[in-house]
Image (cartoon, rainbow, N blue to C red; front, top):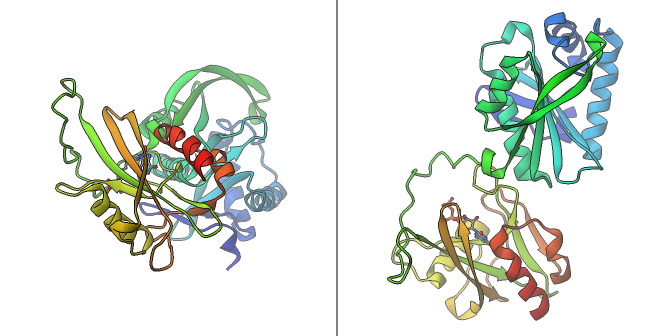
Length: 335
Ligand SMILES: Nc1nc2c([nH]c(=O)n2[C@@H]2O[C@H](COP(=O)(O)OP(=O)(O)OP(=O)(O)O)[C@@H](O)[C@H]2O)c(=O)[nH]1
């Protein structure tokens, strides 16, 4: 199938996939509509039929180049609209989100479903921290979609609108991980409270997490990327996880490394190295970091997480949670 340039994303009943040449006629029917085109900055009206072919070809080239992801919003393989995310070399780790839905599908909740999914996917899978979006001031529907998926308003700006041949006021929105991280559906809302130290100030709740730097024979360290749906999705971290009630950090790590990476580790091979102590989401993270050079089995991302074996002097090229920064510096010096 011609779609191997992008693994389609599911969003409720929708599938978001790369545009194909065969979408051009339907794309043209949907976008060559004054009610749609007048709200979009770069869309001319009337919309020439040939432009649909050219634009679709350009979106495929952009996906292959890793510069923009304009996707078809489809249901039962019928095209309903488009959603896109564009990066700019001038603003690393930032991207711009846009979308439109054909008029006959307005009011079906397609905008929030598709735009929310692409935004969460992008933060988890691309090297991004912030996503921006604009809505024409008069386009209350579009502003409502952005707010509903977690974007916060960020001021006003002006943009050229091709179809109107005018420069018009737009409301600017932005969202980062804090706004877009949805808790995984199966996670109960209240986490098991970690035991609070007797001397902790009233109200401070500790979050106990054990983490491990696996080190391969070449001296490279394993980082795992937090997958979409988890808080801080897209950031790289040391494998590990929260201590379950009654667990020691070693027992927790033996369990987590098996669940997440499919490897067997013994407590004797876990060498305590350092710890992180950092506020985190209303709690206080206390995270011992262990080093491990010996394990059984082959390291695999069993939860769909991306993995990277990283040379110590390259660790700082990877965006990691703030608590990890001092650990990275220590590891670089030690290894
Ligand atoms: N494993 C790990 N967690 C880290 C690191 N740095 C850091 O701030 N954390 C934070 O510590 C917490 C670990 O929780 P988690 O969500 O991974 O725990 P878990 O595997 O038990 O997941 P679950 O709650 O989805 O079951 C997260 O808030 C995570 O962001 C790190 O280097 N490794």
